[in-house]
Length: 284
Image 1 (cartoon, rainbow, N blue to C red):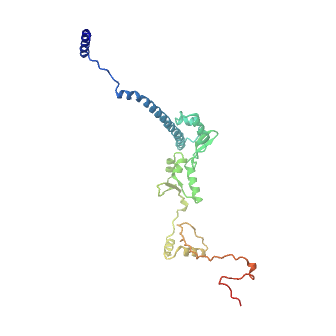
Image 2: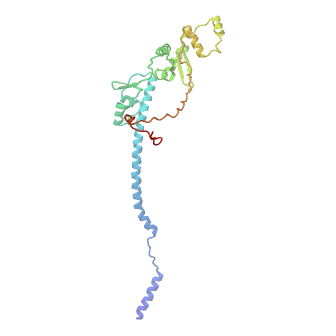
Image 3: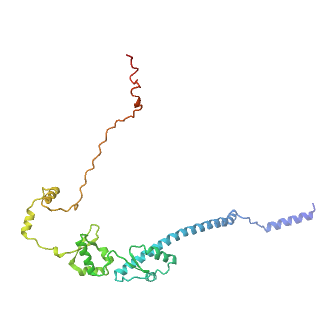
């Protein structure tokens, strides 16, 4: 081999050793990083669709909930203004303005006008205007006293305080002004009932009549005997005022097995046919 070429080869090796060069290879992590964005895009698109669908469901729910929330707010507002004495009717635009419901859509307004407010039992509709409709529409304390007196005369009992407060503007002031003309009774569920205090029924009974009343023993007499005695005296007693007696349930007796009846056939051949159920008859 040419010695000149050998020298050049040795020099090349020395230069190569003095200046090492390292080749950079793509790591496995780099390749994964490049592939990941595709997966992320797919995942992000799927999550985006899921979010849109979920948002769609939420929007439907919130829209229906928002509609009925607006209706409840309107009814409560109409009740409050009625209790404060503002009993005149309002248009829908005035109601929305006073309740600050100005951001509702035309579709929701149409729903309020054609369905929600018209069909609500607590809303009175008159020529496109709306007002509150209580159970008892009372203007003042005299109207309340007339209502209680009427209930007392017809035997209808009292009136719930909640219904009075709902229909009578400034009810607390009116009830306080009536004073002892009203009697309060609290039910077991803590609801209060108002009764008319009829002062004509307040009279004193003479002491002799009280003694005669107390002297009649009725401990040993049951209700049937008392009822029978009153009927003999021509006095009709009030019925079904106390708890009803529960009659014992009579158990039905199991009936015995019925005898089965079989149909007979060939009755028209009774004189011709012979009975062989007990064997062949012996000829005489």
